[in-house]
Image: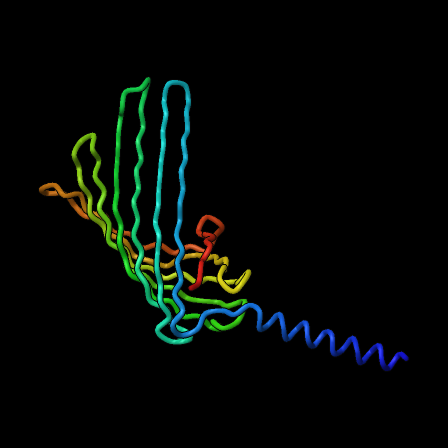
Length: 194
């Protein structure tokens, strides 16, 4: 009897393990992924109000089982006011391309490295100052599939170069190199796979 129960348990565990591995598939060649960020904040202190909005969708395509390429767009809007009178308003637009390499793309869990190049433009409507910028960066990350179509991901840290320059005569560019592996550089996202 014990032998029959053990055999039945072994068959049941094998079946469940096989089903769970087949029920959730990761990425593969030809997969398309959609992700993005959305944020809104509003802060009031006395008669001062500050609001910020950001929306940045991205689309990627797997050209092989391990490599995805894609593009992303972004729109930002920040404004502050005092007693209903506008103090500043800044709008921005970004666009860029990226490439990712996944270590185990067909599994539920995968580690990846992502490199991207972004261009941006901001316009401060208060003083009509426009600024253009570009950045090049690399970030490692982790992807985990919750179902066949939805995955959560996180990037941890960053290594990058950025440059920005106001569009005014005689203005100097601001260049920076960034490297970080602390909690302020951790970001989370949700991916939908077609």
